[in-house]
Length: 57
Image 1 (cartoon, one colour):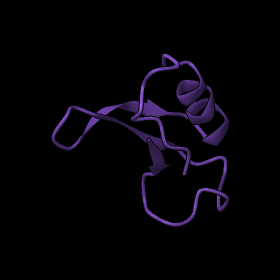
Image 2: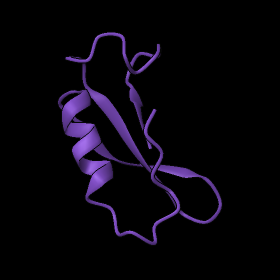
Image 3: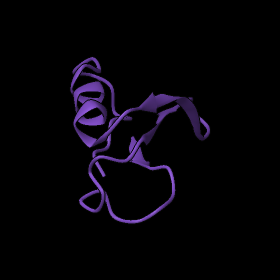
Image 4: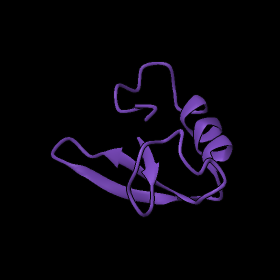
């Protein structure tokens, strides 16, 4: 899952950094920071096909 660091919809400020989160079976935990929306979407696309935690926001 990824979302803007300072809130808002993902289509707003696509050049802003994104917080990357992964599901650990209990809650979403920080997994890193992407430089912008495009990098965050690339990260989501790289997850294994059976990963049910990827969520493009």
